[in-house]
Image 1 (cartoon, rainbow, N blue to C red):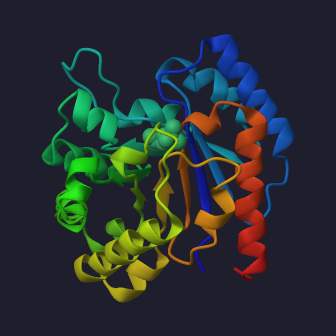
Image 2 (image 1 turned 60 degrees about the horizontal axis):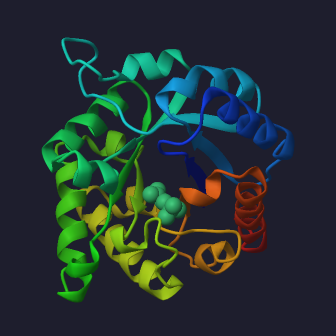
Length: 259
Ligand code: PGA
């Protein structure tokens, strides 16, 4: 059975002082989160400090991006071994904000996913359609292209170590979440594709998170969907009580399903 995973994506928010305060509140509020895995992805500048605060706690550390090379002349970039050194276990790859604002391509994202796996980081590969694509009936075409490109060339065992995040672009930071039925439909489609590119068993074991305006008051209905294995949370991960509420709902949902 899949253990739910709740990931906080702090994006470009938080001075060091703010990040320390948030990490401390999460550590103190989530001493025993229950049957749920939890991770936070602070900005690079706060990774070391947050990592120290969370050391020994059940909350894992993740990064919001990485370069694919282990080192080299790439001004402004951060390599996977640097993240590992700070205690990161996860790295978000291909977030739609980076695809859109920085022009990240499917090929760059594929390289990042492979590099993360090569350094024992768990990549969280983000896929999702824009509002226009949904209106034009292109949702499945878009996410299929992103999934196939992002995971291309991986050995089945490596592929099985990835986490997928379905984040409809129109739902990110807008307060407009996908309905549970809309999300579950795409998650089911993605799991079918995972079966094709790996095996049915691998696909069944992989977690597919939903992201896009997840909050304390919509988390239960989204997470009640069998196909939704957790959440990638942006805005609502910036205040400890809200994020803790989402984690608790995920744990209760998993317990009630006997997972
Ligand atoms: P949001 O962001 O929860 O603020 O919509 C989610 C994300 O971009 O990962």
